[in-house]
Length: 198
Image 1 (tube, rainbow, N blue to C red):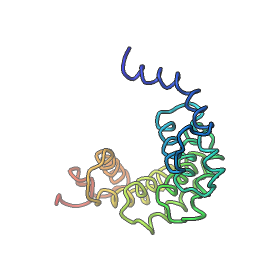
Image 2: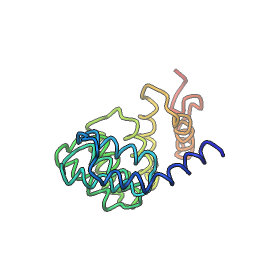
Image 3: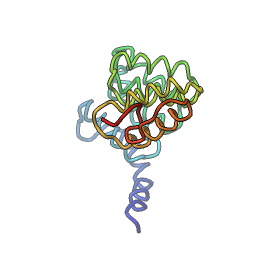
Image 4: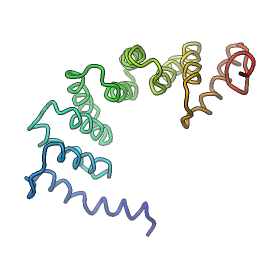
């Protein structure tokens, strides 16, 4: 059996057991944070119904940041957007500037076609974290989907000016070249920006 297939098979076998264990009082008394980590592990293993493991934890501590964020991500995986949003917003009540939660909520809004809400979230994040590549990339995607090519170009060029080299960098540079060409702007194919190479 192939390794990936073996892992998937194992996850299907342990799924009912994992949910039962998460719901049952532990034989060994785990701290709340240990129970959260256990539930997060179930979620990462893609155990079916893993999101249910967060219920007892959140019943005990409804505002637990990590449990709410992870429960929101599990709800996203389970295609339960309203539940995901509820968990994300609960975290934002106690920490309205939580970057990871705002990014996840923005992506959820974007996925649901709530473009203006997603744009407001990403714009707020841009003010908080002007050098966050994820924020610039998501703002560029929203602008492109809205037909605002010059705005998208600005975000993508700002993205390319950031240090580092993530996996998207080449695709972003190619998109910048395409947008500059389409908009009749000068292009440096080596960098995807205007002017001569640096």
